[in-house]
Length: 413
Image 1 (cartoon, one colour):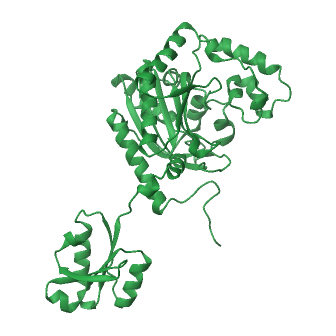
Image 2: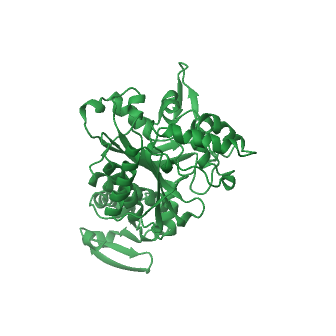
Image 3: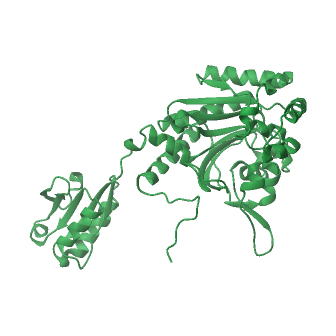
């Protein structure tokens, strides 16, 4: 029986693995520059955590979560996003009491049962950052700058930041009432929108099926209270000060229930219609709702596969250089131990190379063929006559040339 990777999953190898590592390296460096510390959480959590934080009426909870029971009947879920687990950890480890302004970043696999498409998988890699304890609009602006800088650093061009305000518990009910009135007048809403109209009217603004029917939709910005207006205006002014271009998008709501006030998405024309690369926003009530202290927070996340797809189109992959492959071969079997010791020493030398060999029991011809198959740039040959003189042979596998160097001549590799 031939096994294949499950639908919606994929193997990452060769230059893609190299690119994934580089994206993670760049993101982590930028996170650390802004004072964010790494926090790693379990790959599965109590399913109730996501139900309470993300919201029962969201597509993630109602359609996309991988939920299972363990041997003791506890209902668990593979994490569909990163924020809920970070908030749970923030509360459980009492960071809400000990850290006045906590800044954390994370990376790892997430799981959602959705239709696979370009850059979207059922198991995918996500990175993100969460900023706790700062209610100032400067925290929102910093998070957006952070996200924008990471995408720019991997070469993605044509970036636009779409922002909106979802208001607060004081002004959002008025907007919700206006939406219910507006959408109730529209006939033939899709099945999902009919459900959303009852449970979460804001989510109708994110509908991909009926969106062409929605004209002159009420705007949240028209219903913002004075505090939310001041906050949203401050975010815009800070983005301008940081020289970050943005667009106010009245239909931007994001897919999670915990957001309030400013939300945002970063998009790029590199992916065509599937253009969202990163997104996030403020969630000032979530820590308290999950049992912690009253703690304001803001964060964002991006899917690494989608970012890599956009980065590849901008030429990011072409700039990546794989380690030069060097193969160690033996012309005489009695030199195997010496060649093996040399191979280990070379691997420990700190040079930007990948060392393979030696292989015992194979002819030199077979070893050279193997070196070609693994695309070695150089093959180091241990031959008896040269070895007795304290030398080794270096064969350039591309130019088909060779030379002798001293046995300790690492600088020539």
